[in-house]
Length: 99
Image (cartoon, rainbow, N blue to C red; front, side, top):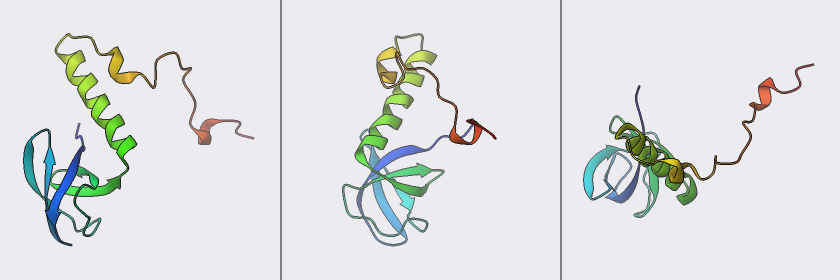
């Protein structure tokens, strides 16, 4: 399984950017998303920015990753999935009311 991680652009150009996540920096290819202003959140997979994220989506992904880490270490993880607690599962649109 491969995961993408939200990172924050610190500086860069159309080709590469210095990005940060949880205090660690990494040079990231920006060829798929183009140059981004400092502070922009991008989803990084295998050293490449795959797409630009808004702050809410970046936080949701970070929460899910933190929850996964907590669950794998045997800790409490429910608080990381607050958006899913007390919610009924939903079918994707393409599976609803197929007529």
